[in-house]
Length: 128
Image 1: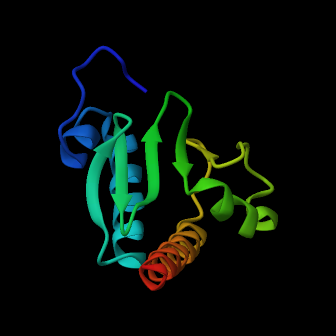
Image 2: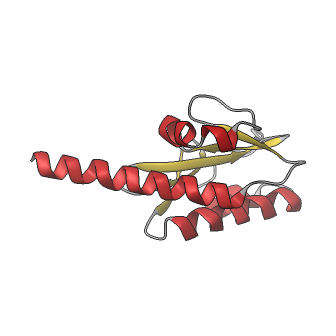
């Protein structure tokens, strides 16, 4: 990720700071997330693009050689097999810039996270 520029105020500003080829991938990722979570809101949190719906849903960010996608540990665990060909951590996955991003899988992960967040919010509501 570029650190030689001021923090972005919104996702458009964040994406605009990258080369055209990376911008295209980021926009497609953004649209994939938007389609899977049409009621989610966009924000910048932790200085990276974030979608929220009853809490943080997913984050993503561009780096020198990959795009990081952060659906949290539950999102990674649920799709561990499908994500096994990618590097990643407990709550993240790295999509190399020189390989195809599995956008349909990203959509499935986002839908899973939407259901998870809504379920958690409903459980909280019932407790009150």
